[in-house]
Image (cartoon, rainbow, N blue to C red; front, side, top):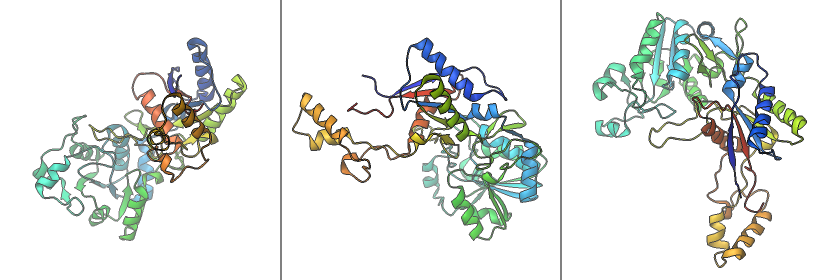
Amino acid sequence: MAGTISRGVKAPIIREGDDIVKIVADSVCEAMRKDGFTLHERDVIAVTEAVVARADGNYCTVDDISADVNEKLGDTIGVVFPIMSRNRFAICLRGIARGAKKVVVQLSYPADEEGNHLIDEDALFDAGVNPYADVFTEAEFVEKFGDPCHPFTGVNYLAYYRSLIEEEGAEAEILLANDPTAILRYTDSVLVSNIHERERTARRLQKAGAKRVLTLCGIMNASRNGSGYQPDYGLLGSNKATENVVKLFPKNAQEVAFAIQREMLVRTGVRVEAMVYGDGAFKDPVGKIWELADPVVSPGFTDGLIGLPNELKLKYLADNEFKALSGEELTAAIRARIREKEKDLKGRMDSQGTTPRRLTDLIGSLCDLTSGSGDKGTPIVLVQNYFNNYAD
């Protein structure tokens, strides 16, 4: 009777140099033995990106970031649209400031790209502010709206980011504007720091005449003095490890996913799918925060996870095509309709309302919610029956 099952699997504490593939396989097999379940074809074994990168030793230091930034962007740097996060961005900003003489941070308002709010949207309306055009210095913003403290963390990010820059001996200036070209009044050397709109932001700056424009993908995208690196995403997807060290997004995620699939096939004879997952993609309706602070939900996955769901909407079938039926007759008709469905239902009325998201985003979000980000101790998630339907 069970539909989709998402099962967190406990694992040992993973350190640099550990064999992540063996640990994942050992942990799943031990969970099967102790908890009395078996694997099936197309079950999904997922492992969080954090332990994949940790096992690979994919770290860099604040000094590595400093050297990279200074070499590529010079002494006066504009940092446009960073997210407001102590874990994600603060330590990166410390490295940026260490490699510069002046840093101008341009924050978006009323919130950053991830939904961390400086002020409520209604406050803008009440103040008669046009967020598309109006530009504020830090002092002007505080005078108009007061000191902005994050409702969950209690942090005033304007003051916090300014203090980080000044602690590194650089001059700091905070700007609030939603037009990225506002930064060009202060410098033509810009580090685009938003995540999902980074390419668009960079294009606008280049079109407006900026001389040097990089996204965070362009910082630590190659090793410096033996450091870790991320060739595709650079600092995007990084997290604070210590006060001086950053853990980067894994660079071997695809390799790990395929290796887990091969290892489980050897051990069990079952061909599972496998993926490495980071932040899920969903929004908190109360805190207004989008979880997805990584550049992608999954940086590595096996071939069976490519694509989108191809599903019929049961409510539509019951209320329309088979509205005259009930009981076992209705059940049989719907099951037969599912078995006969076309391979591509895109644009069909009988699939309307199904979730138009990639499989990796859906399953990765499920895994992120299952494993959490605290002390559950389940960096491995086994998802079963995901590809089953009502007709199976």
